[in-house]
Length: 349
Image 1 (tube, rainbow, N blue to C red):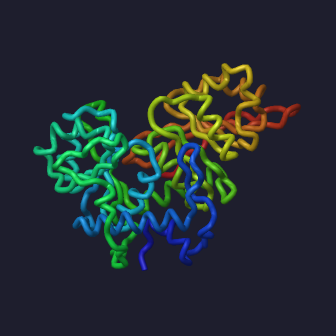
Image 2: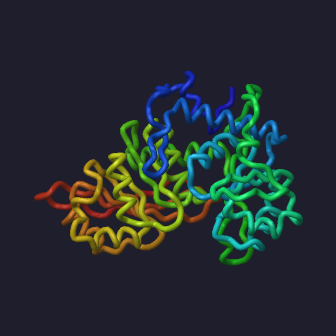
Image 3: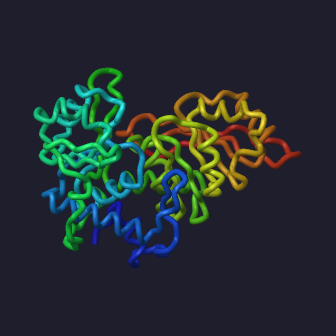
C-alpha cells in the first residue's frame, strides 16, 4: 500500500502511530478545537463531494479563501482524491488570478463569497468547470456557481485511489519577482518530509500546541507549522485572516495554552515594545518562530532579558520548489546563566 499525505489523518483508524479520535487536532481562532475524529469525518465528506463533482487523480482544485477550518479539510480532501491543490493568494487582482487559473488548468475553484466580484470578471475565460462558493456574507451567490452546502450534499464515498509519495499534491506559485509566477509542484512525499524535518528541528511532539498567524495559502502556515504539528498529533491553531491584532492573537494563544507561535518579524517587534510583554505571552510558550524579514541582534538580546525561557528561531524560505529553508536559532537560557550562541541550522532539501 502506498503512503500519502492522508497517512496523517488515517491514524484515527489504525494507521500507525494511532491518534485518539477524541483528542484535539485543529482549532480556528478562539473557537473550540476540532477533534481528530471530526477532522477525518469532514475530510472524507469534502473528498466525497469532490469525487461527486468529477474530480479525479491529477485534477487541479483551486482555493481562494480566508483562513478557516474548511481550508484544512479541503487540503486533506484534495489530497485524498489524488487531486492537486492550487492555493491562491486572495490579495491578487482578477487579472493575476486569471493567469494562475489558466496556467494551472484548475478544474474546480472553491472561493469565499467575499471574492465573487473578482472572479465574476474572469469566470468565462478560465478553464474552471465548477465554482463552489462558501457563503460568509449572506448574499446571493451568482448563477455560475453552487453553494458550499449544495456541494457537500453527497453520500460518503469509500473508493478513493491508492496514492504514492511521488504523486503531486499541490502547486505553489512563486511571487514572480523576475517575471510571471511559476508553479512549483510538490508531492505527497515532499510535504511529509518537510513536516518530518520541522518536527526534528523544532522538537515538536503530541504536547505541542502551535498558533499560526499567517495565511494558509502560504507554506509558512501549512507546510512549515500546521502539518508538522498534525504529523505528531499535536494541536494546530490557525488565526483568522486580515486585521491582525496582537492583543487578540496573544489572547487566543493564552486561551489554547499554546507552546509554539509563528509571528512575522514586525509583529515580533510590536510584542517586544510592550511593557507587559512578560505577562501577555502564553505561560507555557516554548518557541517563537519568526519570518518575513531579518531578526536583528537586539531582538535576541531583548528576548534573553525579558523572555529567557522562550526559544526564538528565524526562518528563511528560498522557494516552494526547493522545499528547503535555512534557520538561525538562538536558544534561550535560564535566567542567571550565560546565553547560548546563535547557531545556523541547515535543513535538508
